[in-house]
Length: 252
Ligand code: 1GP
Image: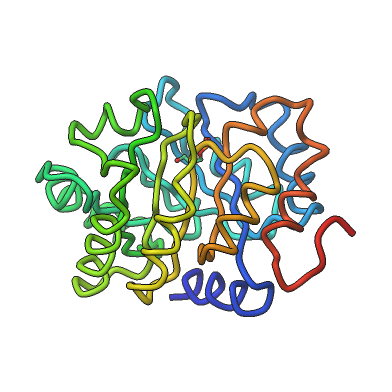
């Protein structure tokens, strides 16, 4: 429970937590150390590592490199059962509760659980909820199930409550990497008010203002990935971190 508690403590002390997603397929290994150090200096609270596809075979090496470059936790955000490594600190043990595909609700988990035990990393049970966000995202396509319509916050809220009753520790409202539209603020509000689990929001967040709006709607953890795959945006990482850390004034 070390990393789970770290995230809860960060939420308590900073108002919310900010995680940066590193997709091994999308970030050049040459600039990885520099980027990770840059993020840590800017106030990023941890890293998620993973991707819906894995086009290269260097997952373990990638995680080791991230771990060597930072003191903040490195958490696997698995796109498949092949993304398990003892080099990380924890893994989001995600069940796609928005879908009705048994493989992504429990099937893959049966295969992954013994691997996680052997790797000795902390599993963090997370109810993962795909939200319609414009064009079909890779996450939606790979999952093979319908996302929740973006104008149906009540379905997202009821799904989150069910995940809470099933014993999940976090809810992840996911618009999908590179989404056209972020998870609607109204949906974040409805989920956060019905369900008492901390809510993670990610997908398509491209401005500090958008990140702050999700926090003001009740999100407790923000994830960005795509936006910083463009190196020209790196100097905005601190603005994102400050926007998320609602206990601190913004842009100081
Ligand atoms: C995807 O929520 C994450 O799983 C991050 O999305 O890459 O669009 O920031 P972006």
